[in-house]
Image (cartoon, rainbow over all chains, first blue to last red; front, side, top):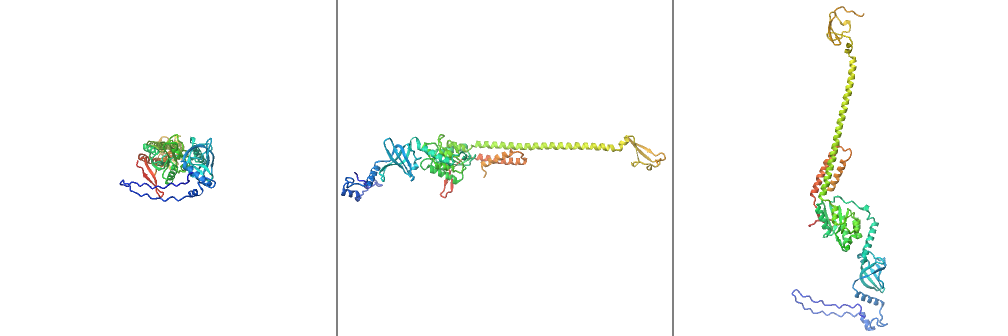
Amino acid sequence: MTTPRRRTPRRVAAAEPDLFGTTPVVEPIALPEPPRSYISEFIEHVGYPGESARSAVTVSMLTETARDVIEGAFVPIWVRGEISDFKAHRNGHWYFCLRDRTAQVRCVVWNRDQFRIPAAPDNGMQVAAFGRLTVYASRGEMQFTIARIEADGDGLRRKALEITRARLEADGLLALERKRPLPRFPRVIAVVTSPDGAALHDIKAVIRRRAANVRLVVVAAAVQGNSAPEELCFALDQVNRWGGADLVIIGRGGGAHEDLWAFNDERVARAVAACRVPTISAVGHEIDISICDLVADYRAPTPSAAAETATHSRQELQRELAKLSSHIAASTRAVVRSSADRLRHLARDVAAASNEHVASRRTQLETIAGRLHALSPLATLARGYAVARGEDGTTLDSIAAFRDRMPFELVVRDGVVPAKVSGPRRGSK
Amino acid sequence: MTTFEQRLARLEEIAAELDGEQLELSRALELFEEGIENLRAASEDVARAEARVQRLVERADGSFDLDESND
């Protein structure tokens, strides 16, 4: 049996050649012998450990030795097997067994390593697990300490997606009523993506081609890798704190399924939902649908499509203005025309009213004229009477008005006859 | 500053009011004039349209800068 915990002897570092290519001569330093361990003393007095009942080793020495041997013998490796007896302990660690038809090994995933695993595995899942074989000394058990797990058929990712989706759904973040309309003419569009990725390139190309009247503000974040979810959340938070954008496009170009994984992260989905302005999600290609897509107000199949949706070309804007212009002109013309019509009607009404007025006056006049005619002395004359009138025009209606030989006139129906008093006047009395 | 979108919204309001019943002529002409003014300004906006790309940079004190992008 080898001595446990053998120290590696320290070596004197070989002297490096100096700048001139010559190797300086260095006297080797004599190192002191390592201090004698309790093991060597034990060997001296009682013989090799475990050799006899007298030299029996302790249980801890046995398990510690086993641990040293096992841990020294295995590099971290991938192991394939089926999950069983899975238990997520209260302390946050996961315990389970990996087994095949004839053997099993106890496994643990420490809390701190779980972030690399999309979701807790289920019993019966076929997985490949990456870890180190260790000995859990206080129980004398062999234990496989796992850092990564990949399930067959991407089962863990699918499970993680389902869990995330269910949690977001429970909080109402996937509800269609939550979807906000996009601004029709955004001025400032925040683009949360990698500053040197294909997505930004495509978006820029689209808005330049369309000469869209917008400002793109790039908010940089890693879109893949371990730090991507946090960076995406941070960028979205920056957009909120800045407050200058009226639309957000979040996304990345196409890539392998794992590369798009950050956009399925629950934290990213919640950050998208918490965005104060409407969001367009554009992750990967058309066929890739992420959790982020489900939460955003609008899902674009690609980053280019997101830019197309967000903006209008100069021609579109001009068409829109022309439409409004002719609408306003036509409506104004209609109001002017109807006002003119009203005026014409009014004039006609006034004319009609005044004609009526004149007519009624004429009738009135004729009536009065008739009445006047009836009263006129001329009418009496017409019946054969005559009127005597003095030279001064006074009516001579009594014998007292006549003097001898006085000239006067007689007014008859059709004229005046000169006359003279020729005899004595005879009175009726 | 009035944005293109605000102008467009105002133009739409004007169009809607012009379509309304019993509009007085003087009001219609007033709206028309305002509409023409807005159309002119909006057309200028469109003509000036240019896509700019900037980068959001957060300073240590939590305030934000916009850097012009060079490409």
